[in-house]
Amino acid sequence: MTSKIKVDNINKVSDDSNIIKKCGTTTTIGSGASNPIVVDGSAVTLGRCGGTVALASGATQTGFGRTGTVDWQTTPKTATFTAVSGEGYFCNTTGSAFTVNLPAGVAGAIVSVADYAGTWQTNNLTVAANGSEKIGGVASSPVSLSTEGQSVTLVYVDGTQGWINTMDSTSNVRGSTALTASVTGACNTLVTAPCCANVKIATFTGPGSFIVSSTSIVAAENTVGYMVVAGGGGNGNDSPPGSYSGGGGAGGYREGRNVPIDNFTASPLVANSPTNAVTVTAQSYPITVGAGGAGRVQGSNSIFDSIISAGGGFGAMDGGAASPASAGTGGSGGGGNFANTGAGAGNTPPTSPSQGNNGGTGINTPPAYGSGGGGGAGAVGQNGTTSKGGNGGAGVSSSITGASVARAGGGGGFAVNSGIQGGTGGTGGGGPGYGPAGPTGTPGTVNTGGGSGGSNPGAKTNGGSGIVVIRYKFQ
Image 1 (cartoon, rainbow, N blue to C red):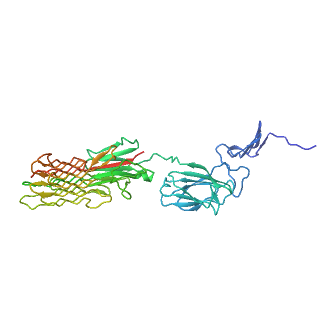
Image 2: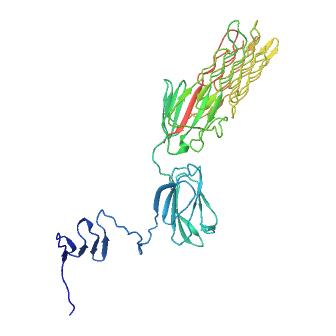
Image 3: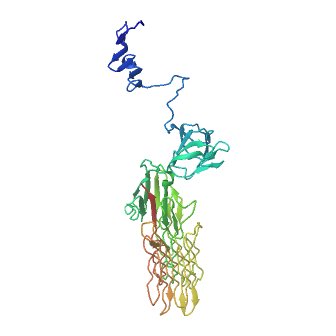
């Protein structure tokens, strides 16, 4: 007969703690906090609650298999590398695009990649198979991943299809950190755009600052759209006895937008790269809003960061006993006088796209005289004729503030002798010019950059003040 030893528990001599303990259907091997094995019926549990089960160095495991997931490596990759099956990688292309080389294909091999910084749309990540192996059934065909925030999981199936994409997320779930800003200046405003719940509009009608307190984690969202309009030029008058003056030129007009981020309806003068938008950082940006010129004075510049719009040129004058004086240059040029047919040049200094246009010339054909209209952002000032002062050049319209508004129109030219009309002001705030048949010379409209209308002797009228608008995505 076979000998048997029958016990329920085995205890240590030193402290009487359990080495093996039987309780009901559960057998525990080990004691206290270090219990390593529990056998309960058909289930075997390794470790204790809150403990860790680890394979010893050099040990291997069999029979557990992989569950279709990867072990994510938390150190981001920033340059070309070769992936290892079973691993996932956060790929940071902020500095430059690079390539992930897949491992040799073995059935069940799995690799994942994810956009670390939300930059794949700018600097793509390329995924390349090993040798002539296939990706999605196509041999030797690298794949370009170009979606912001994308993540992809590839599994090697067989030689026919090679690596197949089993998961492709483009939801780009990210934190809410976004561009945050404020404005200073008594008359300046910061509001949510009436058209778009995720866009804010900062409008400066006077001096102040655009203060960026935090930036977005998405680099492209740190670019802001802008419209910078300078002050319009005054008419050609300076002091009695004065002159018969040409119309003032409109203030320079410059505009930009980042179309993928905020595609508002802009003017025909909207810029392309590299001035299509201004990239901001966390700092204060002083804003200058140009005043309109008074009489023979050029309008003042408006400035936001590197964007400078030049003040509008003043109209030409006929000084009576004094020598005639030419029209001024600027964002748009001033109109010429009948005694000085030359007109002021626009887009001075030059920008691309052009910030304005030339003024129109005057005409000297007694007994009727017409001065030229000031140039506008959208058109040259018209020439004066024997029957009418030249019309101011048209401005341009933009919906950067949420509604279409015209700005930067040139001032109309002065006209002499009964029955002759003064030139009309250009759309966008240009003042009409004086003529015996009307209307009287009129200042440019405030905060449009419109040029002043040409006036009768001694009457100085101002160009309209400028404006600066900044538009950005804030959530």
